[in-house]
Amino acid sequence: MMKNQVPEHLRNKRPPTGVSAPTSAAVSEGPKNQNRPGTANKRIPFGQRPTCTIAEACDAAGLGRTKLYELIGRGLLDTITIGRRRLVHIPSLLKLLDVECG
Image (cartoon, rainbow, N blue to C red; front, side):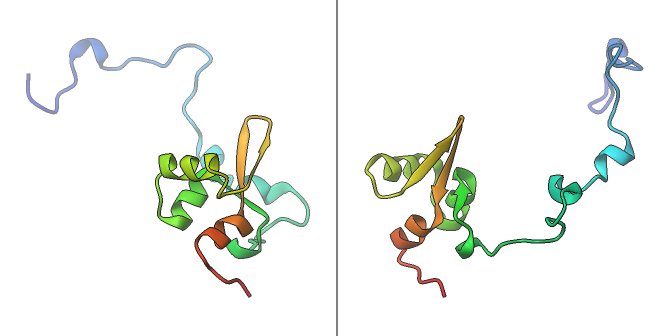
């Protein structure tokens, strides 16, 4: 068998009944907030937002998830948990990073 050939038993397989591939309409829907009134094309600058996700905090701080959770555990970062989602208070993140927002 050549390197890029698909084995015969895997060729031309149809998806299970009831499962369909995403259509171009589903792919091009855009952001979730687009249909909510007053939210289209409004982005709040990061420093003015009240909270961010753990992933966004990692990106902003240039830290990994483990280090971020360590800082949270030591009480250096304030967070809020809503359901199972943990959000970082941006002012505490900026304070930790010694960043002034104006």
